[in-house]
Length: 294
Image (cartoon, rainbow, N blue to C red; front, side, top):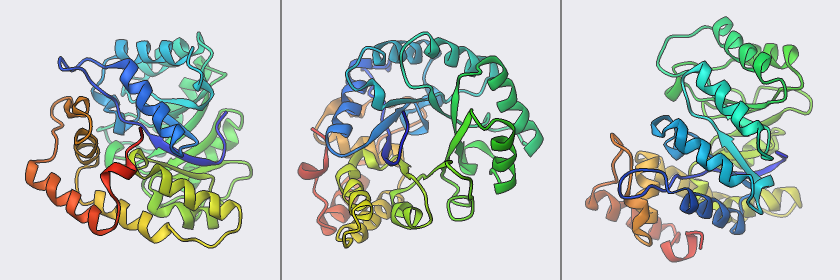
């Protein structure tokens, strides 16, 4: 069950032939939880979901179902097709995995509020048990949810629309709905979001900042002075200077070559950029050997 906390939009690990390495991907998520994450979302945009096959997603879902940490594993579907979205939800419902799923609207095409409302309405009509965390990310989906659009969806489907991942950052300070889970999409917004009543964060960069982010979250919950938030923000802002997927895989690949594999058109950072990233992080006292989940 989804609750307050620090979540990672988890990376996907690929084989040399660019098929999904399901075991390594699950192991990566497991390590993140062991090192501070409350839970992980597989197959979000950070997990190259828009580039991965339906078959690989089904295989991942079936393997998650029997994992000891399955209650902390969540799915982000990452497909454009309404039909594929429904198919994956129905497939997941055949297994004992969390019903909370991260779902955005189809990418690329121009959209209006009514069309996006209809998209979720059709999903819920076919999958009435689904619990949806709406993915609000204008840069990816060519659409930004307004407070009004989210409110209308929650009023229409109060048992199904349970939260939002806000990566456009226009909601987390302004949206006020009782018992509704709001997660900024960056740990740089974690503390401010908590102060506004948010539930935590769901972030790409918690693939490496898991321990720092959890410290900030726990200190807020326990009403302790903040000692790591400035460093957390600085590290996040450093990663934001690069393509996040490229930077995260490059950072992890220093220790494990499996992270070198990316689905085209994605690429690793150049050697020059990778050294530049390492130097900037070292200057922030954020060191490779201390901050990779193991």
